[in-house]
Image 1 (cartoon, rainbow, N blue to C red):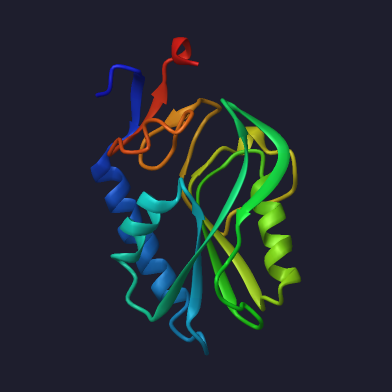
Image 2: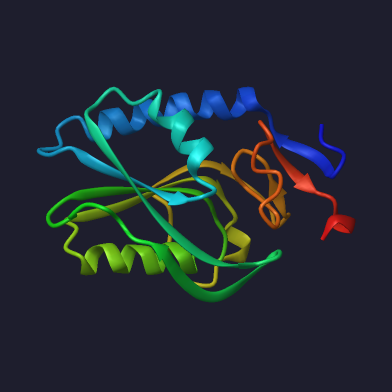
Length: 178
């Protein structure tokens, strides 16, 4: 365990097992989709989750990425900035947003609105972590890896000031580190 980590919430094995189940569910849910579903990863935090998840997807799908930010340190500022937009057209496409964590819900809400505005047919959300206690807007994930309490988590893509993303597990950052 990393020295800045207070405790491990989910081991690498637990994450892999959950991704297997989520991948099976997504493959089942999208098997009759008339066109390839577009998986949209939210950079940078979703990359490890997305990489593990798609190993367990048995249907045809496409990938694209969007980058959005609302955090400074440990707090969401509520001001969502789109840093990188999609590279492909999404008119009449079914979209699955891949997110590392839904906290306040503001980022997901803005991205869903943007994708519908761009002409998406349907937009669903899958998140590795769901922190319901911090939600400030009415947005829910369609698929959830794990529910968590209000703790600042790191690892498996989640960061604090761009550090700890490479940890193979999800842990709680010690308070003295922020």
